[in-house]
Length: 173
Image (tube, rainbow, N blue to C red; front, top):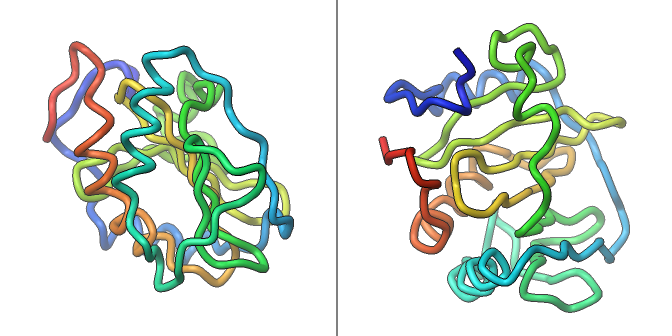
């Protein structure tokens, strides 16, 4: 059974997810102040605009500093390197990978924080990319080295839950 195709009530707890982050480690992914803007369809773009309006001013203990080009589909916090959020991205290939669902991929793990399901992927260079699962829009968050990933996901959870609904057929925990 593929964990992203069927909603389960049990989700990786915050302590277990934090332990996973600490065990795997992380480092910088992209030091630039710019990021590619996704190009989703109109319905997803509208969800992303609502998410942008609901995002917190501070994430992971750092203030909001959006990347260029300016867009309601991207957001950033901090700099050198920044925490970068992109809304309306394509579904990551690993999200449908049986190896990930069965826990056999050392670089990708499904889990959940504060009622939001995430796919965590280790990137080249050691940074982490988190992508929401089971929601009407895919939201990607890249967390650089030295930043508490758990705190970032907790800080973003409320805005995501308020503005990006579950896909039909899924239910909230």
